[in-house]
Image (cartoon, rainbow, N blue to C red; front, side, top):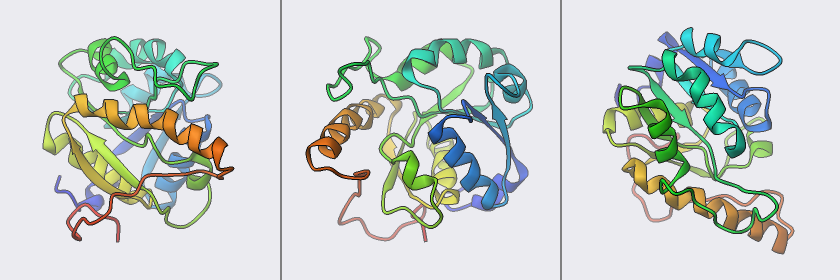
Length: 212
């Protein structure tokens, strides 16, 4: 898949694990509106394992506290597939304080939980779910992290299909940056009474992988 080849996604089935939550539901809605095939995995609907087994691409949108359990359920069905982890390590009640896990990031933790045979990338950390739930493009960039460019290309294409500008952010370990920044954004939203601050990378030339 090339950076701009969102049409390739039309041949894939996307499982959104935790799809009844605000972020999962918003992403699933946008991908369906873009003509993509989406399966929702939730506690009250299709089981996580069943959804993952039926999918070509798996997107995990559960809270940090539920990450380990979700990964355990999908792991047997994720080998050889791209798994997009959106998890942010927020630990209540101090969600405005950066609290990265011992592994370095939630994405690296996900890779450890799923094993080397799974292609873990991370994305969609710094975009507000309520903005995604509304129609139209969102004035926010989606940074995509992963150790293989081809795998990141999948995340960039998913971002484009969701109406975002997808950008390669480098290795999976770099996911620590947007994960940490989420706590900062929560602080900014509270301090400045924002309805959902986001991240936009400036001074980049138009390039493949950017949202039209």
